[in-house]
Image (cartoon, rainbow, N blue to C red; front, side, top):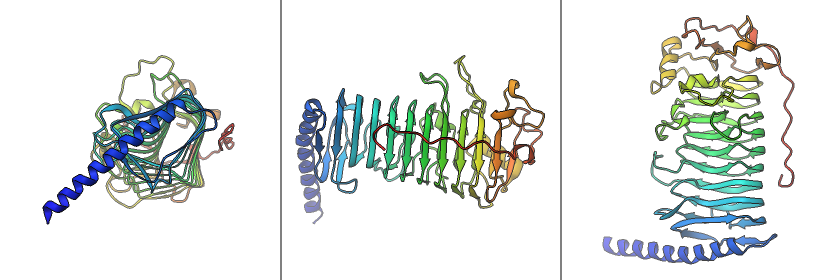
Length: 403
């Protein structure tokens, strides 16, 4: 009986593989020959591919499957290429209704695309547990403009499930990130909205970062609102040396070294280490060689969120987590600020001066600590009064044609 099942499994694997090889050739040919206005249809089924599919220098193309629960493109055992799908140097491209599985590197990468839409798309790695050898990014638009990610899902990425980097005019909405190191990350990007998403079971839920040594130097005007950021307590399985390898398990929303960020109307629930953290790049303990990089968070507005955290110990598997346990035991405040200030913006009350200030107001479950990292954590303050202020609401991104 077992041998029959084994033979059936081999037959099905070969059958799917052969179908996948045929479809792979057909799709790559269509990607090469496509003209403006074409819709490239991918049928329902599970197809095994052994190399990346790439689309370059195209305009007004739709790649459409039967739905992310019906069309599966598996790159397990991939022999060539790093990505599952790679879209480059194009404009007005839509990808919808597919699941990309087990890419050697990134699930779907878009680079230098003006107008990229991901709709009803899933990326996932199907090992029983998340693993450091999983690809780094699930949905990965970088150096793009007019980015729309909606009704999507990302599972198991060893860096970020949904990542938008060095881009402008961005909407990420109604999407779910699960069991990634970083659930949703906006990095060195401007004019971005993240809303009505769920980030759960990741190491860190939603991250807004500016990092050094990148072509686009400074992000900003990022709004994070109406999201559920819940129980992001999973172990950090990132490759050593990656910035996200330093994220403590139990991180809800983290703002790192960026400016003009508004976080509001979110439910941030039971993230064991830090519900919301506002940090300078110095907290990474990495040397800064980029002379044009600005490492401080400024003009941050945290308001009208619901913040809940069980009385549990923060993670001991990071320096900051262990420090928080030493200072607060099981009662870590819901909002943490590292207190590292730009000397040119120094104010006596510990808040950056003027319009650069960090404002925290009207949050349910609002508890706070300035952990005085610059002073070696010796003068931790729970006084929220210097931060009881508000900024004008940030403006929404305006997508040119794909919203």
